[in-house]
Image 1 (cartoon, rainbow, N blue to C red):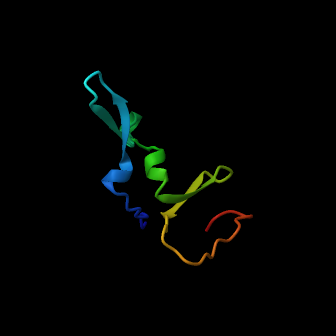
Image 2: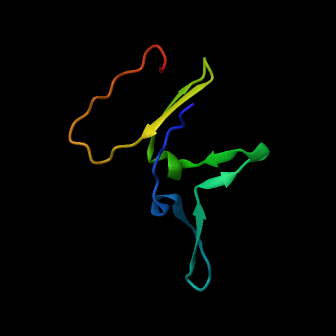
Length: 82
């Protein structure tokens, strides 16, 4: 099986979390460890990916986002993802 690759810069994964009394900002990373060695990819990761959830067949399709395109070949998904 070939796993998809989605490139995400560290800048995209790190988000400001809170600011303390000294004016210093704490940050959070958008990837966390879940139960049973699972990895949870938060919205900071999903910003860089096209994701299609097929709940009927328990399938997930994922692809790299292309932010700098000048054309589009987006196709409506009506009968599932191959």
